[in-house]
Image 1 (cartoon, rainbow, N blue to C red):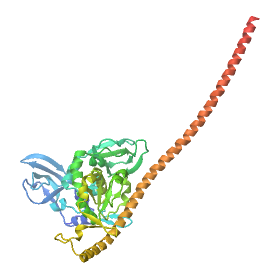
Image 2 (image 1 turned 60 degrees about the horizontal axis):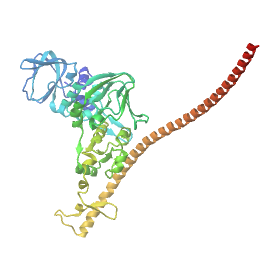
Image 3 (image 1 turned 90 degrees about the horizontal axis):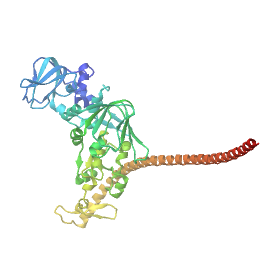
Image 4 (image 1 turned 135 degrees about the vertical axis):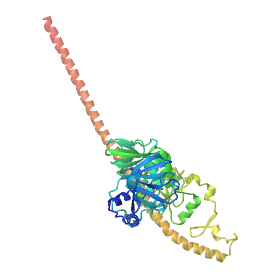
Length: 478
């Protein structure tokens, strides 16, 4: 019997992991094919069973036991019940119903390989298919995020079981720029502000305001560098945090994808964008031709300028900052890969591995492209024919390069805008200091004049006292 997605059972099933990540239309289709089963006592499955089916508890209690010894009791209203019961196959344990229970039986492939959310993008906005039940809770919101959709159910269960709840008051500093990274944070309720100081004496730059369901703190855990920003509580806030070791093994490692230099070249030929997140000085010193420079500290403010239509290959000096940048892009639904080892991993020999020579039209032609399969040089007519084919291909590449260049201009303007804001702020501070200095000088001159006047009055009084003293002395003598 089909399940109504808006019924009590439907709302419970909607929160099961990873069914919470299904788009609304696919979740509705699934509910039309499944049935809730009931049992009064009895065994749901036994140790050693090989059936590729997962069981979810909807009501009642189930005891997990091994050789007659109780291991755990799962209640339907617990967080543990949002996961499949003892999901390892073959079964490592028995599952026995405590009295009357209602449960769901699903094919393991649906649970292990749920389809991703479908994103429909146009020039003005992005539409995300979601369930009609948009209320959800922090856990459902977390599971629908692009990063967590990529993770296997076993990882999700370990993550949720490893989360620790912490509280901060309004105005408290949660993370401080320059401190060591130790935890990854999820906002359960409340709001906080992410800021960064470009230099010790500079003003704070506001990077983002975060609220329920948002996450932060991953940058330093991924790149293994000190915190690059400060997070301050704007309200009383409740956070869930995951320690660095679990974050790296359960979230970072399964999420990030690396490519080598050759794979990068091939991806660029297919239309991938090279995004260099090094500082401007590092980029000026050495960078890959055709890459766009967007320093990591400003990348968060430039995300809207990046197209989701093309994959991005992230580059930096040693690859560490690239990992944090790629994670940020993945969080915002942008397909991202990392050049393994960064610029340091590219030796001059690798860059010059294939000999190239220039031709009059300004493009470079690979010698290998004009060789026969056997390695011999073809006749001039064949060379001209191949060069003509390459010329046509390059006209297409010019159009793509122009688009990438335009995107680069947008990013450059965004970076320049950020720097101009900082310069404008510093100029304003400097002007304010000049004005204050002038006011202080005026006050100093006034105080000096008052001092001179007071000293003059003091001398006059002193002379008058001396005269009065002389008069008194004369009066006493008489």
